[in-house]
Length: 60
Length: 384
Image (cartoon, rainbow over all chains, first blue to last red; front, side, top):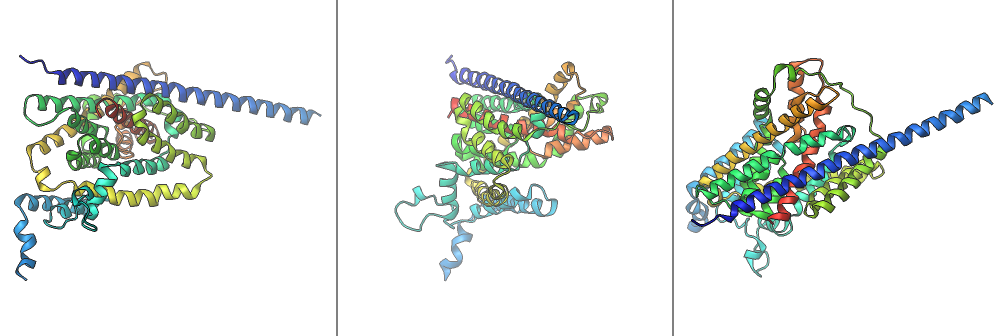
């Protein structure tokens, strides 16, 4: 009986595509979360510094 | 005088008459039921025009040869807009990007996983189509199977983009299947959600407000997303690049006129041309065969399996999530923006009137658009 290479190709396409999609989306999840965390932290520091100087001003 | 009356009536076949009737049904559904009218109305007209004989409208430039003025309007659009350069779906993606708010996804990036899980339908239909081809039931090879599978992404432009490159002869049917199932989201998805979830799960309360997303995040998202995705899957650049470019226009807030043009004028013009082409890709001699019914059936399987995949992934995430997670939002992972998110919102309110799930469902919904574009790029890279 002749071996059907189409199925081998199909499985390869399926697991390679699924793997690729998962890897990309996991990376995107992490990167999006990381960017958000960095921006929020920077904003919080900025706010703190801002409110600190306000305090200093008012005390002066 | 005799020939004047003879031309059309003598050349028309029963297949043409049936397809004209289908076209009229589409127009009726668009006008009376308001089912995806922006798509179904021009598709219906395209279908009728394609099945009226001897019009010359479908004659493509490469078929017309060197004779000036002999190519038909629809033939020109189909050849240059879809088959040769595939410009039209990419332009739609540009407009989609300008319309899309990625805020819910940026606020809760783990929702990307729901968009990924909902793509499982694509692969089930892909393998199903190959099995039909393998057993000699239908004439589907790898390329046709990929074009059929992508219907499960529930994303019209992606389906058209992939089919026009891998199996152009199937373009009309796969596009109509994708748009029809998107129009029927409210009929298909609730049954699957009800089957896979318990009442208690469906009643799970999620806080309505998401964290505020800063403009800096909104601007960085499309840029980072494009660079990362395109570096990993270069063939997804036409879709992901255009989607993210449109979104950057929107989020930059400095090019209002361009956003307006992309969001309204461009999308409207391209939709008219693209949908006419989709309808016109369905002359009777191409569509009237058992393969069409199988494609429609496989598309439905893909769509249903995608919904199930999203819901099951949401159930899994619920087990490890600190915050309560309503598994119904997983169903919105199939693109179909914003219909599937609305279905989830509607069902959520019905189960628990305090629940307002729309914004939570929009996250997986837009993640689904990105995911299906990535799968499309992967298919093109591996099979195309």
